[in-house]
Image (tube, rainbow, N blue to C red; front, side, top):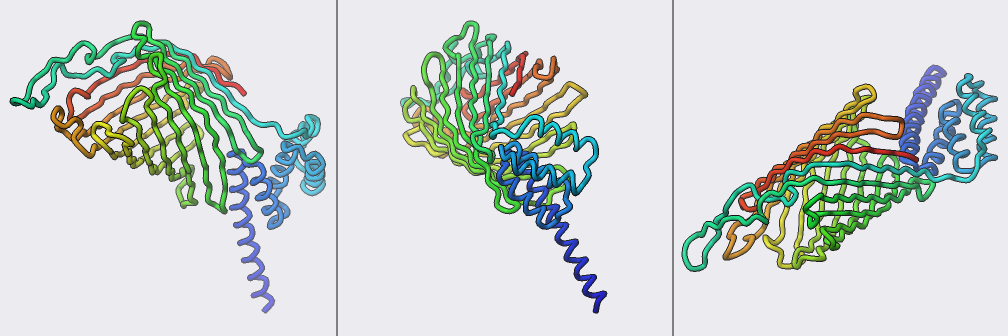
Length: 400
């Protein structure tokens, strides 16, 4: 009887340890996502189940200090020194935290700037054919030559890009701003700029994670405001039993696009995307597949459309330098003739983008990147088919 009781107690203790380790991993995930309040609550639960979990005690103390709870942090530091007699490295970390003081919560912020020069072989997405065949209301098909405006135009450009991210709360809500501008040397009518502002908020429900994102974007073309975008997204991270450093997320979103210089092109696009991410010390990789349903809000040529978007990306660290490879394929399928009486074809579009980049560090915060991009747009309406190649050399700075 006594042996059975001891065995039952041992099994229960093992289950408690397994659960506390699971909670501790959740707490570390919360820390990595900036959700300090959630991390604190989870670490307290870990300590309740496993009072001798030294890592949980130290992480909790450091979080309390970063939140400005000086008295609670000092109580935890003292308990760690008394209970665990930490090694010199941990003693130094505690001493440094005490010396720096546990002031009020300080939001994390990060900024980056890129400036570069590039070559674009097809600025205007000019057609890869020299003539096209159109329907004729009187007789048969008519072959028409393309004017110069529809042929590929080559130019060089200057690019400026920047982004800024800042914590808005101590529990991981962040705000961000992204800006990009491209100015061509000769073809100024194709100059473009974009500005996006947004907010991202994380939640955790047990082992499930959820991110909600909202952003607003403005795009200019030439000298005019061309498009306004509004987007809402929710990204769900289910606790799947995936191997090693692999993660899976499911994203649902809707985007409203308003064209300020075009009529009948406004639309709402719904998207459902599944994505796998893989991380190791020298390798980062991702692959995603999404279904998109684009509903026209007016008499848009071709009407509604639906399609698939597939992306893959891989980044490898070669010592101090790094290389990147990426591939994107976007397919769209229309629902009606693109231009009845003129182009009696339901538009089928397939765009392939291949990207490669190499980055050399100049210092801890600066680097140089060489990027090559190839675009092939294949369609069943030949006038819309185009090829493009771009090469860009840029300087990048990143700071906090």
